[in-house]
Length: 313
Image 1 (cartoon, rainbow, N blue to C red):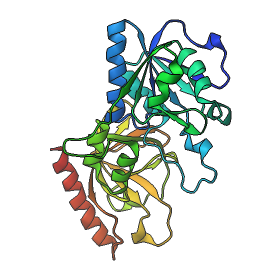
Image 2 (image 1 turned 180 degrees about the horizontal axis):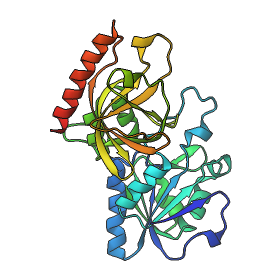
Image 3 (image 1 turned 180 degrees about the vertical axis):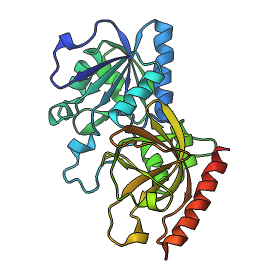
Image 4 (image 1 turned 90 degrees about the vertical axis):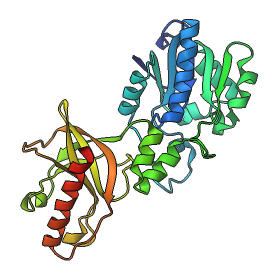
């Protein structure tokens, strides 16, 4: 897959030659609703013998549009993770457009002229709720008007679960994660939710309890599940290991502590400080509890460990 990073205004020479089917969207998390849109584009590209291209942004449009950042923007996927998912879906060409004030100020017609026609799109594919142009003032139903018969427009309908009205969406998945409903979130994603980070030094308290943990420094703008104890896998190097993880403040050891992500890797005894790792989140075992004693915490960890092993068995 070829990746082309664009910053407005781009130079025509930056655009690879050849016509394409261009799929439009931000695609945070590249969930099953997004996959439906991209696979629709893929099918058309195969039928027309064209390249499959996707245009996304380097950051959420809200970074530019929100006047006051009342709540921090949290992502389901980093740009790197998005690239990995796009490659798995068979995308030939990924445009990553810098969402800046200059780009956001484009009126709908200029956006279409420069970022659909200018990218050699012969078919534009988007979800039903795609917005574009200054202040995101136009939506998918207006695309044919601005296309002026220069390209075909295909709009993919809302994707829902059976007997449900609510669409599969990034915001819905974020809500499920915040409630610890991992199985439901993973089902809507179409894969196991994953975060990346670096193993850093912690207080080494877990080692004294018989449960040494890898403390994971996760990017601040990544969406973490609800505070609690989880069944996980962690990828160190090229290998995935079963693990149990904790997101919390270690309240047993005092108030007002920093939020940490700690992973106890089952049957593992290696120093991995500085390693870039990936963590998958399968199932929430329980919420966080401030135990009255360290002994009470250790007994619960033993129960959690057995539950983790049973899950994988």
